Image (cartoon, rainbow, N blue to C red; front, side):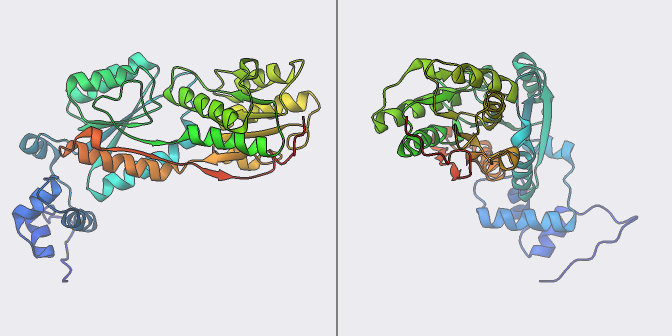
Length: 351
C-alpha cells in the first residue's frame, strides 16, 4: 500500500477523501466506518480507525455532531468523595477504556464528583451539553440513581458490576462471589473452622454477592454460618483495622479472615500486629482485588486479582455496541478473578 505524505504548515487537515484514497475504498464507506454504522464490518471499521490514527485524521467535532447526532465520546464520572476508593484500579482501568476508544477514533471524557448527587448532576449536564454518547458506570449500587437517570434519558450505559434491578442493563463484571466461596474452601481445606468475613459497604451490589459467596463456601465446607464472625463497611485500611480488631478480640476469635477488599485486609494486618499475631502463622488472611500494595505487604497478601485494564477495554467495546443499537440484555458478561497465592494464608489451621 502506498503511503500518503502530508506536509505541515499550510496543508489542509487530513480529510475523509485522503483516507479513502490511502485505503483504496469508497469515501462513503470510510465515512460510515468512522461514524459506527452497523452495516460496516468490524474489520473495516478497525482498518479505517487505524489509518485515521496513523494519518492524523481528526473529524471536525461540531460538524460531525450535527450530522450524526454523536459526539464520539464515552463518559466516565468518578465519585472522588470520602469512602470511594477508585485509586487502586483507576490507572489501568482508564488506560483500558482509552485504548479501546482510540481504536475507534473516539475519545474518553472523564469527570469527577464529590458524592452521588453530584455524580447524577454531572452526568445530566454532560448529556445536555452533548459531550458524551454513553457512560461506563463503575462501583454499582443495589439501587443506583445513575442508572435511573440514564434509563429516563434513554442514554446508553454499561455497568462495571451488577445491580438490584437488571432490567435494560448491560454489564461486565468479575465473579467476586465465586472468589469468596473458593477462598473459604481454600482455608477450610487447611483446617480452619472459624473463618471470619469483613465485607465492604452494603449499598454496593458487590457486597451482597461476596457475602453470598462466603456463605456458600461455608456451606460447601460443612461449616455453620455464624453472624458473630461477620463485619461490614470496610473500604480502607483504617476501617479494616477497626473491624479486624473486633473479630480478633472475640472470646473465640477466627483463625482465618476473608476480606472483600484488599485495603481492608491490609488493615487486618495492623490489627494482628497490635495483638502480637503473625499473619500466615497465627492468623490466615486472604482477600480480593489484586492491588499493588498486596504484593509488598509482609507477608505478601494472598488475593483474587482482577485485570482492570482488560475490564476497561471490554466495557468500552460493549458500550460501542450499545450506542450502535445492540440490545443491552444481550450484553452481559461475568468472568472469574484469578488467585495469586502468597504467604498470608499459609498456616494450616487446626482449631
